[in-house]
Image (cartoon, rainbow, N blue to C red; front, side):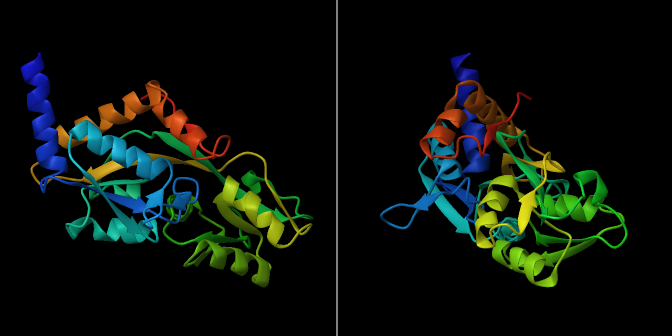
Length: 252
């Protein structure tokens, strides 16, 4: 048994950390998973800490590789810059990235004018215009699922709010905690709808190997499950002050 575990660890390490260092792609734009910077400017939060725990499980050092936006992280998948990533799992990203099941979830919903009578079910209709941050997991979902509404995409989260506000759009799509913080920008003008149109499934991912090997993905998947069941994910959520904003995902 011990020999088999050692062999599995060696195979996972060879695939996930071929340089001897686990290079972890981190999405800086998710302010729930990256909540600050350390004394040397390194990212801090749930995602960076989970990446460090993963490296420790592989018995290699961790190197955090930050990206301003998730689409830039995904675009670098063929560049040999990162070995694993911590981002929202989505079908559009899965052609080149193998994802685990989610380790945590974030509700995605809409902000609307205070006078709006629309519900989430009303949004996909002719003439409805929805602002969204281009390339985010919820934006990818909307682009794939909206059949009638117009998606007005912006380069950054703040730009998506500005488009919603300045153009008088019907709704702003986003993660519930970010939308809640945006309410203070123009007090009394907007409200957030109850419910969700989807939940962003935050997961671990690795570059899809050309030979179809599963050693790395199997290790990541087991690590993600263990992190949920052991209470590690909830511990990190509490430690970084995002309790009630992030939720531990259910079991696989």
